[in-house]
Image 1 (tube, rainbow over the protein chains, first blue to last red):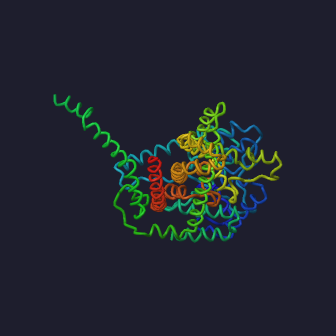
Image 2: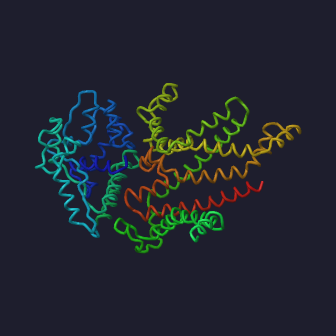
Image 3: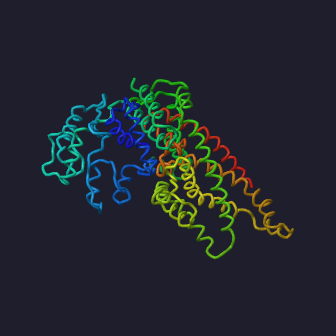
Length: 216
Length: 302
């Protein structure tokens, strides 16, 4: 759907093919978006991806209506409890052998306002958050970015191994102070392409010129 | 002595009326006038995340407006909003009117069933949206299942994710949501038409259609005007259904002004852009509100 989620989902595909948020109209990005378009056109993926969000599509997987889903480890606690069939976790696919792997990261940017009266306390709070990183996986199904904060006895060990491997290729989005607008340009390109309003190349060229105007 | 005098003044004297007026005016000032004026002011300023906390911001003149008109999504969204409002009201009004006339007939249980219709209207629009989302779901929705079982369609219709249908799906849900309200208001109007007028017409040999066209419609005029005006205001406020059903997607196919305003303000933080859309909607609603007030005044003069 046209939210940050679609940018989050698309960037790894573009990055793996040689693009990125500031080079979104490269040949690789266009091929990645064309691939998505083909998935929907061929009914491999339901057109409902245009309006459903990640948890909705996760529920379709739990219900056995979807055979494969690209989502994050935060769905593991629910899937482990509710999925009634045999299922596994795999690395994100790459375009061809030797292509770089990629994955997306989120919720990494913290801001302490310049006018804050308690900046030191804010930093102490951040330190506390990161000191708790080793609890992320077992309690919330989140993978800590801090490589030293590995959980002692990870739940779902097979899945953990895959996600830990995938994490090596993960990149944050941006960061950019105008990120919501950058992201919106990418979302628009995805929606316009999947609905055949325009082709992938034109849509991503438009996104690129919007983004160029934003980040200069 | 003084204290009891004050209490007495506030409870019985002119002070009581004054307190009521002050309370009402204060409420309007804080919760209606301030946000309204603030929105209009923001539409002429440069507002971003960092100037949110202050009131004094760079004056932007009309740039927010010209910027808005030049956006590629402006024309489609205005068009969508017009379709949304027109179709919603046309169907809410005709179906609501038909139901109001139907329940005016004296048959067992008519008043109870009419009351039950309100159940749909008191549901929060978000809940209604969630239910309609299941009905409209492309792959596993009830509507597609029903249509396929009846042999009316072959493949699935992607009600919410096909750009050709998305807006109309939201409109259908909105019509459903608005019918009970229209019906109740129109029922009240119908009940106000004196029965002897119909009796006299019947004696003069006027048939049902003549009675409807020459008595019911003209006497319902002010009520209909009021209902249409309220309908325009409510439809322009209809945010929850869009949020629950399509979020304006796919590719803005079902995006309407009120949702666009929210998207700009709270998703991409183009707060002045959102305020600009809201200001233009305020202007439209004021026009409609004037029509509504005049319609109500005419109704009272009967």
